[in-house]
Length: 422
Length: 146
Image (cartoon, rainbow over all chains, first blue to last red):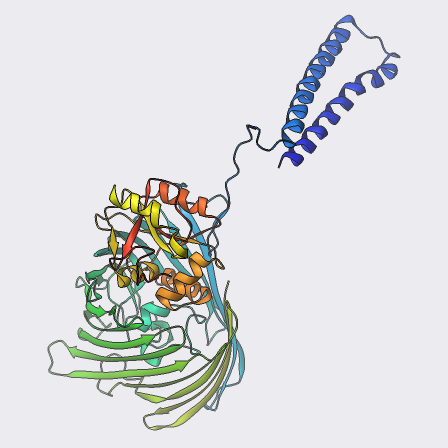
């Protein structure tokens, strides 16, 4: 530190001296022109100023040189703070607890792949997955912001589209009350709020049928716009609650099913749930939730929607066992017609070094009489795959799946994916 | 303060890893599961709604690696992945702070009343104190963080 300061000061002195010397060097060339007494006065004044500066700098250089040979001497060099490191990316200068400005962090997720299947009319294709920009910002100790913006191409048109998948202002009052306002993933079951829009976070290639996104043919309202409260009921038991209220979804085709700015009815969807993370078995989580909404299909009678969901999860750094079951019930207003849609998936995997083989079986059965999603029908079948972690932030996956369908032949599919975090 | 005096005398005992907080923190004793919940980000506040701030040494230091191994059975890679996922789920706003030196750990603890850290070295600031873990202090028989 002292050496570099001395070098800098010597450099400054050298420049100052060269500037001082420049005055007489330029003088001969200027003697060809008339030099007024005022000019001479100004030059002399400038020379005196520079000499004074050089003297001051010399004194400082001598003092520092003397002190550098005697480290115990008191030198009034301001202390240089040692670097604190975060594992995430933060804006320059936003390090440490003493900063009071918002602390923006940016991360991203992406995936590319190649898929093929024996479905009639399908072709094998390289495919861009989702390009996901995930932004968080801590505004105060208790208030933070989160957003997830996804750019992805439409499967039919190949055109890119941008979706703001999550936009949340989070107010953490305490461990018992955590409020979220904005657009969030509905806490139906586990998968939807654990993996969001990141392929890299998921073990398998994609989401189970049951938790497919609305614009991908999914039958659950996986996004909500509204507010949510979560928190701990009992830290001893590891008991937590979830309470959400939002606009619900629009089942009409041709419009965004997530009602971002305008609800098509005055009834609000709500979701209540409880789950347990027992302290005696870290990695275990089980719970249930009940979602309720009135859906207004265009030109049809209103539909009352109830979604009961339950999950049992065990996860640690090696082992993963995910089990979820859902029962949707759609009742048509003014009619005794009601349709029950059962669905579940079970997924198991274990990590061996950088390799993680996995197996999933999934099932969804939408009856023909269902007023909203009868086109989905019955889907069930296994998926088996292997994930290979290339490093901490990139993984390669290969997966084979066989899907059985009601009244149609089975579909065999093969897919690969390179998923990454950046 | 009792805890403070205990802290100064016991923190470096025989290489045991002490759980250290700001002396203004009213808590004197933590259970194993409470500490685990703090490290995993499942508990984010002290009683009285003071925000809990986890301050750790950098990966590769004993004060960090041993604690992750003993309390969570995780290595640094798995711990970092856990916190990234936690933030992604909106369950945490930022990862634990990693700092380079003991003096820096102490400085952050002094600046943050809700801070908590793990230290093998003897604490030098009287405004810090060592917590009991399951009723035991560093140096006690059966202390968990050895």
